[in-house]
Image (tube, rainbow, N blue to C red; front, side, top):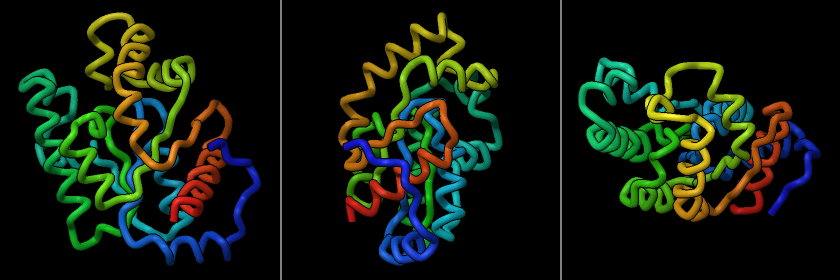
Length: 191
């Protein structure tokens, strides 16, 4: 379902925020805008924003590239699953959570998010993803070959898992405020 770009009023957003009784969890590929959109969304909903990747780094006292280099992806995914479970089940779980690109692919993590959160898939085309991820060199999975080929393969492989999210929003090259509006309307329709 593609949603229009008309914005919601502050009154409508406040009413929507009061109806949300669980975390809003943004899922999707690296570069889809989960953290940027998540921060803006949390601000509008008057909720805390949590970046799962930052929480993983804090818990491990290492950067994500360091975790990948020293322990591998399986170890990282295990820690990611535990951190997301803690965020969703914690006392301050009425928040907006941005997950890492591979988090929702894990069946256990996906089940937890679908059961106890409002899952929103931020979806972008490969060109948009490539443009966004090229701004930083902190993506361990992109260090293993041609970034376009890797993003295309990952996007294709992960799409079936992402498609289980009940809310699907296209994140395009335009301003993030448009994507935030589409997320708000998606949540409103889902509730």
